[in-house]
Length: 321
Image (cartoon, rainbow, N blue to C red; front, side, top):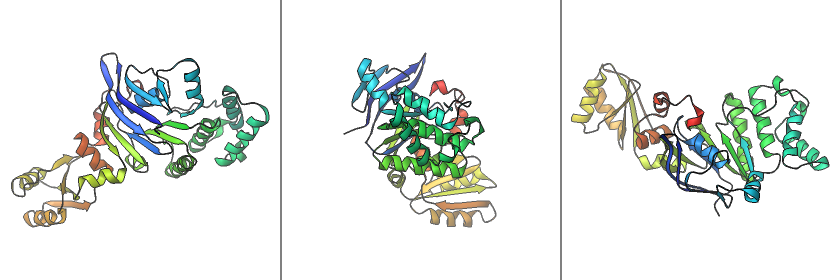
């Protein structure tokens, strides 16, 4: 059984194609991350998945319901979804428990059942002692936990989150991932968008999106293992000379990023020794490591994740994915 299935999914904003033939599947109970810079199409997919945008071309099936849907089918799907937006959706002038009660009533919960669910969610997310505090007085991390409690109040089968770590400190991010893992263990499917490599690395599987296209999909460790070898990164006083030596003498063309040279090679340590011998005073910094998700992103897209983000003229506009 598949929780989410997309085939040939395309979406266009005016003359710009935000998603171009996206094909992917998400299994029930897994934590699935969509990794990419602003403008890559991940937020567009989030909006399609959460039924905020209509499907224009291709096929999208969520929890067995084909989109676009209407009437009773759309109602059933929305009742099975829990959605956490990148921008806060809480009423800052209400208390924590008042926000949860409002959410519950929208989903038809009333009386003792609503009170019981509010108590359970408040305790689960460590908010019982803050239940009657105004949301405006809470820290960013606590507000994010209220958002999660609110999204899970009605017992959704699919939790969809857009950049869930926005505004959270490192400790709050750890707590967030503990919460997501526990939800997945309870059978909830989790789909999230992120531009953070370390966050995507925690997912069961991930899809790398670049310029609206699927660049890679798989388990983080499998994607990194596919690169093979080691990654040699160095900073040199004369990078052009070192780059020329690597390409012409050693047959390994390097990639240049942020003033540094990067090389992928099965025996990177041997290259390091040869470079240090050829440029005894010219290498100011050198490191050898196993491939990371950043290396996967570079190999699949030809650019660094942060560089792609900064170069995208639409990066500031969430409406463009």
